[in-house]
Length: 365
Image (cartoon, rainbow, N blue to C red; front, side, top):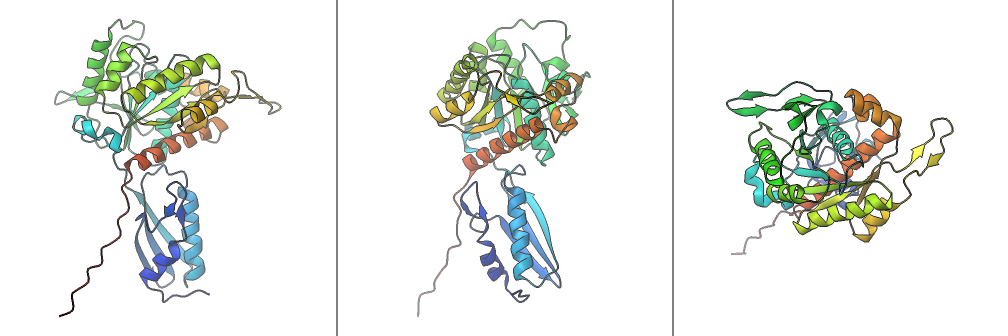
């Protein structure tokens, strides 16, 4: 039976039945319920998430609405959902290098040709679509593809000797491709590459970001190792295809990040299968289950399996990525799900143990 006379504490007790499935705790114990007000026929709830890209955001909001509508004498429930993205502890030792960036995420692969840049672009845009403040750094200096994939061919400008990043689809971006002739090859050794990327980190006006996604160069050579040692990383996403040859190289990339004590947020298996547009039958062109087996063997999460779809290639070629051009496609949904899983894994790394208020008892006189 509805009761409009419940206190805020009693309402909080009702909401303790709502659990955050990612953390396995009540939203009240996690401190996610900030304020509750009931006036006349409306209940107002301030609900705070650890990331706007929370995979269970919609379901938790639905449960809150259902409980309050059922137990209170109200006709509507107004949700004010906010978020507080915390820096992951994994990147804190070098936090002074990027004081306005909360989390840096490397998207890497052990070899080229697995769609690493495509994954980085679509995951970054997906996070921005969920409401996060996101930057995208193209560290793949030997083959910068971000300018084409994002449909940008202008040069950045300077503001007080600092580079102003270009913007598109809600992202702030920097790439060597914005500064050099697209028909010329960059022939640099690893230390010079690392020096350039360091400049892009420190001399670009990134502003306040929740996530800076870094599209790393493929491989595990000198350039890559130098980069991961100099960039303050919060976590890494490893991109592979299901075939054994790609997985063998992906494992090397995973080991490289583990060697430098960088948290592995998970594996994205790209080109998992091809779904026939006519009959819908799935064909595993590059093999089956390799990403899942690798994730299980090395005890890291499998963030997602991205199908092989024409819309992905088309979106990258015309500078309109699939999460923007065709957001309801299975591939776009898979990119979005992978981004949310990476974001929630960062939030878990940054989680502080919930603190209950201390009760001070007065000594009897």
